[in-house]
Amino acid sequence: MRTQMEPRIRVSDGERDRVVRQLQQAFADGRLGPGEMEERLELALTAKSHGDLLPLIADLPDGTDGTDAPDDVLRLMSTGGRIRRSGDWQVPRLLRVESEYGGVRLDLSQALVRHPEIDIELRLPYGSATIILPPGATANVDGVRTGWGSVTCALPGHARPGELHVRITGELEYGRLRVRTSREWSGTRR
Image (tube, rainbow, N blue to C red; front, side, top):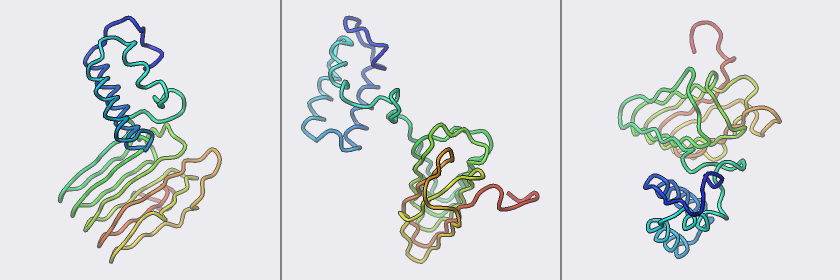
């Protein structure tokens, strides 16, 4: 966004909103303190030109320099239904998945994954999840807390150069998590 801004051009509501989201993400990441966040938000919401917005985000990542864009997060939620993603879908850098009682199946084996490392945050009090990764992928499940639930993952836990690495964190009170590659089962069952 920075490279498209001409300082003298008046800003649109959409441009203000994008800067606000970028500031909110920077605050969530710990890059801005509460006072600085409040000050920058006020200036962003009252900005009249690109020149007013540019200083507010000049020291923050915008996604074009290899860091993550503020909207590179997908939140999937269900109370009792199923959450399923498979085939050719775009995987963001961060997936937040919440399902009170339902099942979750995330198949990344044919998905478009732009990042070499992604994070999946799970909140499954009573639900279960299966995460299917492409062959060669690695997964770290050390950040998953369980009560009476279980976690099954036989994949390497450390990243390998050139392969997708997935960090899975979150809570499964009574649920079950299984992480595998698409190669583990043959035949029609996937």
